[in-house]
Image (cartoon, rainbow, N blue to C red; front, side, top):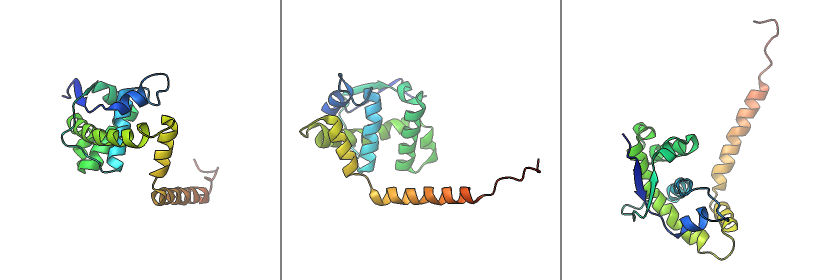
Length: 158
């Protein structure tokens, strides 16, 4: 049984990116999941994070997109298929990578001069793995080529 609530590190990036009329993220919980993705991508795990924020597990567990991302991060980190369905493992991964990612976002987005949205876009563009992206595009092209080479089914078959 997952805990009803859990605590995570909430730094200045949360107020800057998910509060007010210029908010980029619609909630602190969505930013936590994004920050965990950033932390994972940059291998920035924080073991002893500050527990300054609190959220309810059901905000993640009952949101299909957030729960899929949370499960995928937990599985990718642990390489244990149980992590996909274990909220305790997912919370641990979200909090530790989330702390690392939030620290990166504060430094690379919030603390930089200019608009936070522009800074976030620049950050994402600067850290995009172009080799990985082109590899994925190649796979998509191959799938498209194979699918388009299939002949349409014979109309006389049932």
